[in-house]
Image (tube, rainbow, N blue to C red; front, side):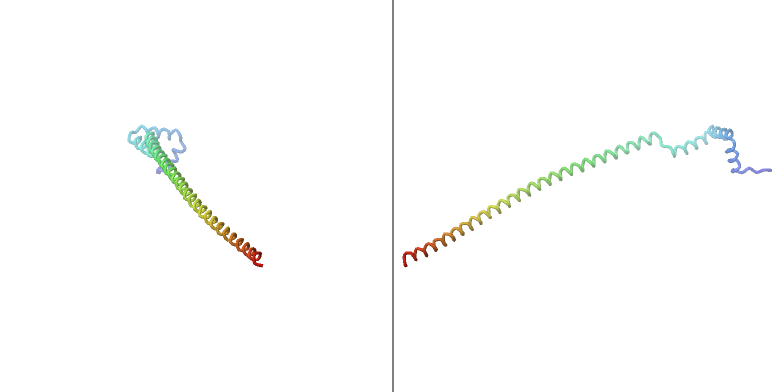
Amino acid sequence: MMTITAEKIVELFEKDPKSRKRLAEILVTEPDIRLAIINAVLKDVSTKQDIAELRKTLEKDLARLEDNIENVRKELKEEITATKQDIAELRKTLENRIEREVSRLEAEIDRLYKLLLVSVIGILISIITTILIRIIMP
């Protein structure tokens, strides 16, 4: 008596395509087996609904990302505008400071010029006086 093992049965089906096809037809016609096969296959297959849900999720994520990008752009524009205003204020402040310093330097130069002029006039008067005294009083 010959015992048939599961491995032997599989080998026989591998060798006989016609028998393999008949077994598949028998299995598919049995409602419980067909349902089990369908459920097993469905676990690995994406349905149109799965794809539609994934598309909706991706579209929402993309919209949220676009909103975030737009918010970052707005914030960046605001920062640039604020920076430009800060630079303009700094420029005005520096221009005012420079103008005040130049005015102060002009006043100091003018004062030094007048002091120099007075000194030169004093020296000239001293020289003239000395010359006149020597001429008048020999």
